[in-house]
Amino acid sequence: MMGREQPYVVLIDDDEFVGDALRTVLESWGYRVALSMCGDPSCQGFREILATAEAPDLMIVDYRLPRNVTGLDAIATLRGLYGDHIPAILLSGEDQSPVSETAGARGLHWLQKPIDPGRLRSAVRHALEG
Image (cartoon, rainbow, N blue to C red):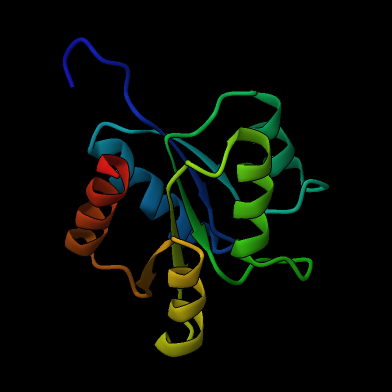
């Protein structure tokens, strides 16, 4: 990535341990990461991400979030601000079938928890290469 700014990743996961671990892994791969524990615009962490006014290069979002918000809602909010072209990876501990089908129908990548770093790295590269 010499001569190029590091890609900016918005990461949203309500589990602090998972969020911190994923942020650490992504930063070790050379990405700039903004982490929020919720995807609701009334949440402080999410408002801070929105306030930067910087379009993310990639969104990695957990499906189940607090305040009756899903990862799909958070992705829709960010895409509404920055454009539908922004790739997203939806993370879920849910049964594969309904969530993965919904993700696929919306053009999202999907990974089931627990997250394997190799699969995550592959999904991130694939999403960023478009």
